[in-house]
Length: 263
Image (cartoon, rainbow, N blue to C red):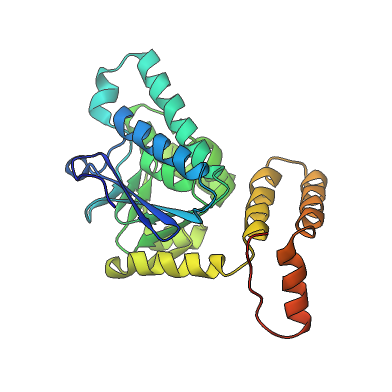
């Protein structure tokens, strides 16, 4: 069941999917220390629960996924406090990226700065057609230091990422789709349905194969191409030890749909 509405983070479990909702709509779901700590706590619970198949992250209200870091706090904080907040945010995004479960961001409005960095850490992103995305950090004298300078170039390429990060300009959902920053764009009223449709397309496949595929993508990006290819080959061999591999290949040969059990 969802937590009380005054909480900065709402958590709701539906079957084996956990929905996390950033819940500071009065400040466009801006990320402060309290909210980041709540996200970290929930992610650690998710990571330790083998029954959970996916986590979906979105924002409360209709205006924003998250407008980014709490600027009022940053303006008053010491450099050490700013660094500590960034380190906490980096720990949160690292957790998202290494959950060993599917993660999808449902971008229901503005996704800016640290908010976009949260979404960039997810495996996949679905945005409403009216969404605006961007890294405006340089426009306030800051840097996209919560993972944006690392993940955005890996998602859309160095040149496009440099333009976004150096100009601070916002882009709309369709432009984000064209450059590969989001995977799907949909009408606001269809956002959850579109996200769940994407989840079903993934969850119908063998769970171990899905997890190893993501790990090969994620880890392989930081390796030379020959080592990345060898990692993929190793995981191919590793997944061949599973019952799902034997059942899946047998079902293919017998021309029927396989039933996977994550073993």
